[in-house]
Image (cartoon, one colour):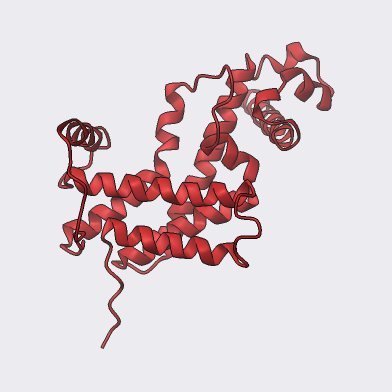
Length: 239
């Protein structure tokens, strides 16, 4: 009795994947702001009313693409950390950052969708929050593991932490369910992550053209410098 329902579910899942694949191609050609359900339906040779049974609006389709992109980069980052050397927190940091850049270079339109300029008229729903935080929370977990192991190297100098900023950082730690990290460490990690995203954006959008012969080397320098900002120690070689 369950077979027809299962077949319908499989057919729906398959068509949903096709819709998202066509929408991703639209991202590459016209950008997120011009994403059109009618154009997607036309390429799939569907009537628009048929497509609305899968995505009620352009914003629903955008949300699905955003979540899919966040999950794709999150999956890659988590695999990179899992494959790195255990307890080598700096190496894990480097592996995660390199994986994000590798994904972005392969899928620049998806990177622009989730880390670029907001899409005019689109308001991201709460459904995007958890997927959107995966990579950052992964990096924060690496920093936290290093901190709990007593390995973080405090900076020689640091800007004064004003009361409002300290309160905001403390609230974020609570929101992220992170315990035992000082607010200043969270702020250093957030600063480092924004710099890493900025380096990727500068490369993808052509702002580093003709500046460096090897953008990967510049990115590696940025990753190592930001690891220093966070306080991650270099890996100790076995005697």
